[in-house]
Image (cartoon, rainbow, N blue to C red; front, side, top):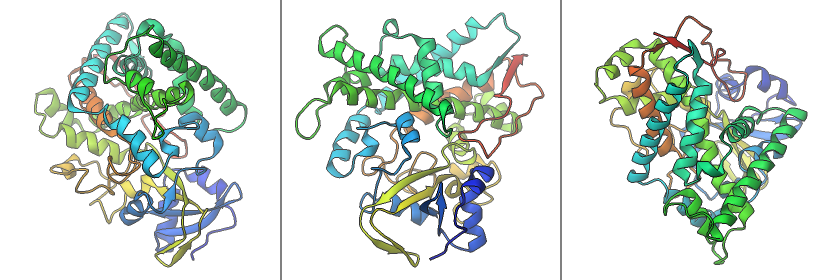
Length: 409
């Protein structure tokens, strides 16, 4: 068993995203044990590690995430906290939302809201792209999920979703305030579910509000309004978080202008490879935690039931054994790539196969929205002036320091 110093909390916070992979490189291993906040933890990385972590038999998500993070990102009763048949049954509800027609619809809604948002800032000389994208995605997510905008205080919802994401890695009063605001979001979402069941709101069939308001678990009982609200938020919040990828895509277009020129000219054969490389190259989730269900051994390390284990997502996406020249932005690498053939390499939003494991089904909507965003950004008359586009890797989640400012061309 490879063990690092007694506690690595300070080093982890100081180094950020590369911490796990840098230690693995130093030790010549894909598994090592240390402590975070004085709690024993085993870090793992790589394609094989991702396959083991997501195979559904060895790990559970229950009690794996620190409460301050869980309460903001998922909360109790969510699909991510379930295992086995209960998880598979609930996951089917999410997968039912991700068909081709639904993806086309979310893309069309995003474009509509993008153009609406740009009209609203016509008189301004500059905008911060991250703020603009969040506004667009708040409205897009509500409309796509079947949530009437008349039932939504959009600026408030945008603020509450922002707090869930921006303060997830913080401690103390800032995190507590975000959790308190989330309770208000949950109450609003539960109220929507109750209105659907009372016949006061009729969302389109196949939308998230309709599906979760009528979804029954394995025992045949409808989800409680509170749990249905959590799952509704688990549709809206991840789509809202795609704003970060929109910003990273804009950075990539600015720093690799040949791609912007190609897309602006209508050459879109590599549009999806470009989007996948944005997801691989730029930092999104650093890692994902789990708890060992039953003891097993891997790479000479004994994993005992209850052990806290963290899979390195960022490091796996930059593993030179999986990616040729991983420090370079090269969309060509994704020509002909597919999730089914390589389920444990591009793991920015989890590993495994969507229908079988805990892999996020929201990847499909992420890719669709990003394809639309890249097309719009490549053809816009807004420009990126000189600014600080450096991306700090010791901040969770991270962004370019400037937030990416756009000015009139």
